[in-house]
Length: 395
Image (cartoon, rainbow, N blue to C red):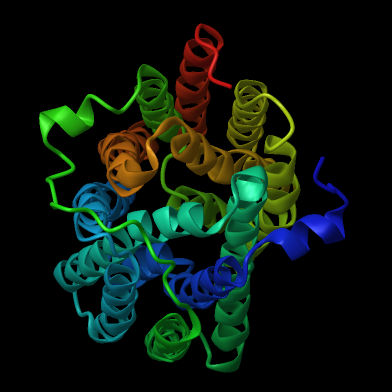
């Protein structure tokens, strides 16, 4: 039986997974320096409404998830993952200057979509690469580790944004320029720091999306896809956490701290829950995560006071740590190894459509009925996902 002591598990995780984690961390620092300020920038500097913010965020995030269908399938067809991942990271890094020069929402939309196309291109090949590299008995821990390092970047980025907002007198555009640096470092690390594992040579390349291959994706896999989509309806864009924080009355330069708090909890919990998922029922752990999400929504709906908001975003971060790496692991374990890129692609296609719907609905509810109704709606969708999960057991 494998040694399951914490240090032993970490030592069993291959170097390539660590490198992918640090690449994700650097890119998240770059992205979150922009994204933690972007909702406020659009509302205060560009005059956008909450509905506009919701639509832009929904389009952006759903674009990233939908593009993963094609990048994942292409990585399966080519038998290579790294080149697509490098291209995706490079595209995202090169979009950051567009935010700095934006004079209207049109430029923001273009930059946000290009940035998320880059994320979509790299996402499925990167996740499939983690699954290819990691031994099966530590796969949950490997996904949890990558997610934890990714999330270290997700709270470091807003923290840097706060510091620079205070240092540079709320100069949004200067911070957007500074975000280019960690993005380019991520590309360099991926390019020179990882060697893709050899894969069995196929006599003839086949289209992974053709019917004969799609039939090899099991009913358990498609159930994971369905649960993931309903889950995403409940978990609309985190831009609404930023807008909720702005309502609490704190100084505008300090609002990104809400993302710091959420991602600190996320980073601290992702690896332990990833390791736990290697030893317990995935269904039970995902159900527990949905219960935590419902609690987070109810807390955020109850009051706009900063202390209540902090409790809500803490719960939000905990549910992210419990579920995001877990869903990636569930896809890996219910799909054939040679179709993992395609499997992640379809999973993210459905989640992308759901994200677009969720963020549009959230923005409409916010403008028409207020913040509390938005979070109550999220709790209702999470309840539907929980009921659906409990009707079918996936390991």
